[in-house]
Image (cartoon, rainbow, N blue to C red; front, side, top):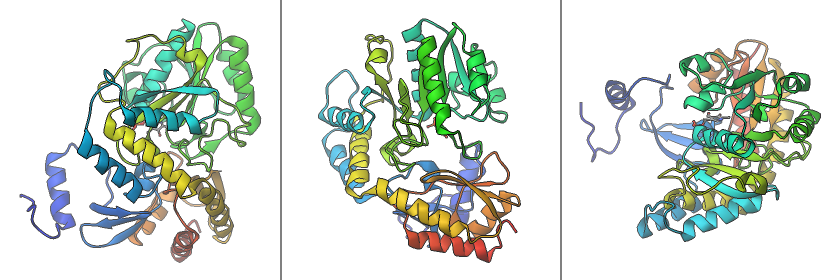
Length: 401
Ligand SMILES: Cc1ncc(COP(=O)(O)O)c(C=O)c1O
């Protein structure tokens, strides 16, 4: 079968058949062919529209195809698609300056790469270089990516098994229990790395004193503290980053890693580091061909500008409060976990059928490794009226009861 490029509309059946024929089947897909997006909405090849509370896998922070981001990418594409870090670039200079300007002031330099797993690999490498030590402590329930070092740091489900043989020197601690990390953090440990809110594990967060205690412990032992903010960063929690936020007791790690929403859909990852870390990195210690490319950099700057211009951090806080109020009306909801627009709704019954029933009503949500938790990672521009649609659907399907 061949798709006609001049055809007005290609049906879902045709698209799905072709993709299944030619793409390796590594994801269980929803029965949707996404064709166009606008804000919190996805329009399909069958002319239907879906409310996207999953944000295109936590990527569409500024909403789908935000005009300011699209214009910036288009303008850059007409000038220069790419040149590597072997040359200076105004697009890269602006993106680095803007990103550092919204970060906690201790984080003074950016390293650009292409994805979350790559950001984490580089963060762990920097920690090893800065300390001269090998081991890395991560936490049960944390997810850090699928390349060798990151998957070896992932103690969630069977992901680690998929990465066999694992990189040596990875140690598992219990999330939220400071004694567990303390007991394992000896003189061979280079870094403690965590998702400050564990997303895939079902949106698990610790008390603010936990982050404080981890910071103090790292300082005492000369260990590098890394926050994997691939999901929590770039405005998702209603703050620019979990690092430095009130929920995290204003704790600032030595490195934060970013990806997902950073480029609004253009692949880009980053590590933000302190002077102490950057002081231990020399020319040629790290590198990537595509990291810091002009299109990605234009997308980063425009993404951060959009979050500012559209008041999206305030919007997240206001709409989160409204969502929590409205969810209190849904009898099947046992608890709501997380912060901002990284929320885990825990139901009294399994979340899988609820996810499916919502999809039938044209609302996209996410599941998690906790079978009772439905995950929401919507665009930061979600409004109260969208929440009303969601809650009405939950009530109509009798979710959790
Ligand atoms: C917290 C966290 N870290 C790292 C990653 C890996 O990011 P990427 O898929 O861009 O490699 C993910 C992806 O889901 C993630 O959620």
